[in-house]
Image 1: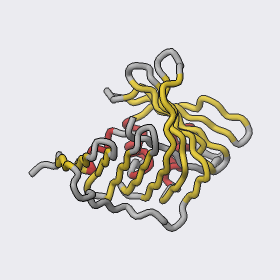
Image 2 (image 1 turned 135 degrees about the horizontal axis):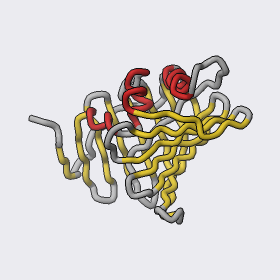
Image 3 (image 1 turned 90 degrees about the vertical axis):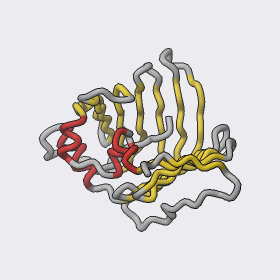
Image 4 (image 1 turned 45 degrees about the horizontal axis):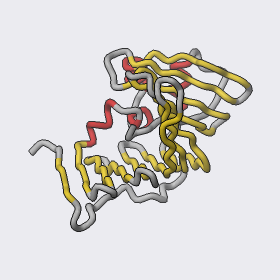
Length: 202
């Protein structure tokens, strides 16, 4: 699961319902930087793979996602193109940034309140003290069955994705920095000697 993606923040008591509450949380997010661990489980709940990495986001459409062993990979959105650098394969793929529209990353990068209502049914799965968990179920056909977003106060804790084969990916965040000047460069230049696959339209 390449993308990840999804979090934001602010707990409050005056919002009308889960969708309105989540909309306001997402609307407050301008930048995010964090370390993460991505854990994949199969349909039976067995752990398949655990991958550490770092994440940086900035609206609109800027992202840097880097994972380490066992799958070293760098994904960068510069606002116009989405670059995926598979280090072991020495291969770079360039896609139009529009491919993010059907990914969990779109929740953080550019989703507005109308898109949230049109694309997802939002429900609150759990609330205990400052911890709240939302589930987002796509209203139309999608690559995944549901997204699960978890917060503690104003800090995003995790993002979960359940795909159409019932496999689950959970991204647990650490050392989260929100709405601070971005310290990460959202730029990418393919290293010399790698294969470049350009999927943009001519």
